[in-house]
Image 1: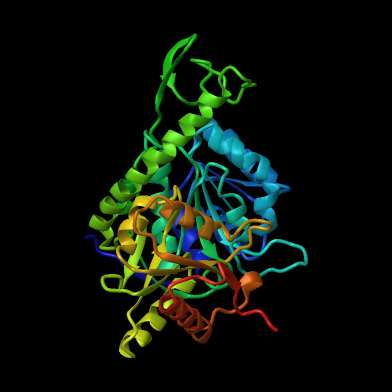
Image 2: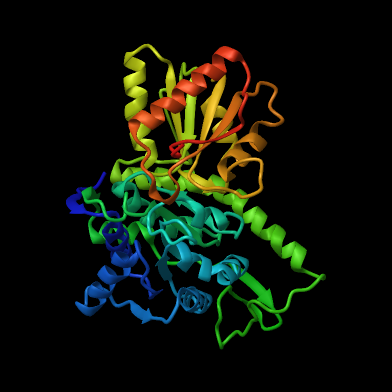
Length: 404
């Protein structure tokens, strides 16, 4: 483990500082609350000569990701950051980036989508992008934000993956909250991240690295109709399947230099749990406190924090839940017209073919930044205990914390 430096920084600054240490070739971004601090801080690093990044101040988020696509296609490391409507404006280019197998890294300071206008945090923005072909990592605190923004490059650029990575941090809750963050020395980060790797392809001009090169020309992103489109989509499926194996390998390598271990998901007090909550992001830290309180009262409560949402860690989830009979799923987003929230639907699908299934209930909470207090979370555990006692789920989806 390497010697580290303790810094007092917020989540956005954690993103910017980690990215500064990586020193990508291109950063293209447009400011939007609560992400703006990331690109403001990074522009200061550029102005002060601390990085030699080409900083592209664009006119929209669509242009920001488009610039990153062009840079990454030419072989550069490219980074951007956004939130909410900014991510929505990137929508078309999200699919271009993943379809072209470009390992761009993007930080998303999760924020509710309009309308009505709301600048506070829920997961509606990134959940809408869950099927866009990007790896998605959800962070619990500022330390994890910093660490994920370093690991993301190794994950996305791995020869078996070659996919863009989205690092998600709850807006304001993490983006604007100062915490103690242990940071690695610049040279250690540089050695860990290494140089960008390219897969080898063969075209009419011979073998070459998969990047635009006038010496060995190739085409990226051509019209791809019935003849090959389906096959190329399946290659993205395979890349996601590889990613679920690569991520723990990168985590293990990162643990050796930092002492911090993450993996696909985190279990807490699950060995003998009779009721458990599963969720994403910063709320899980509050739930850990509630679990400790319930344990003192004799309630066998537990939690599973899902760190990696795409690719979805089905096998790891089944193993983590074990024989726990009742599971509550926390969704900080609505999937309108569906049987439940996005995380709930994936969890139910995961357990559908299992011989021993838990009773599963969905709890949609925190939309538009509404507080998830310990009292509210304790109330959810009380509902799970009622489900355990009855042996059935009377209401599959509940909206908690709503004024009546």
